Amino acid sequence: MPKNKTHSGAKKRFKITGSGKVTHKSANDVHKFDEKTSSRKRRVDSTPVLADPDAKRVKKLLGE
Image 1: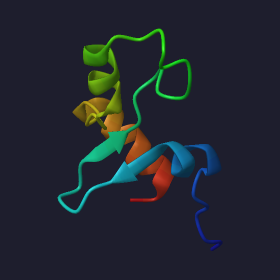
Image 2: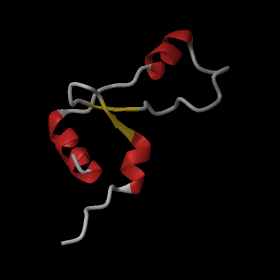
Image 3: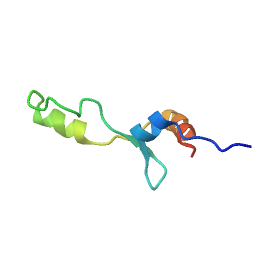
Image 4: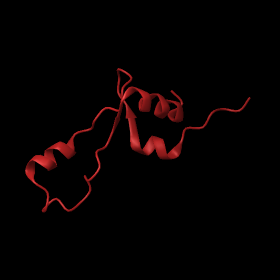
């Protein structure tokens, strides 16, 4: 039986923490920071944890 392949798009976008949670990068965190407020920039800087139903799907794509 062949090996399972990791989904290339998922491995670039998601990371699994040591405790098994799935984190992702926030939207709007690439450029144009001059026109964003300080509070918005701080909020966007964080790496939020995915909800459990979404995390289950992402882990399947990552082969976890």
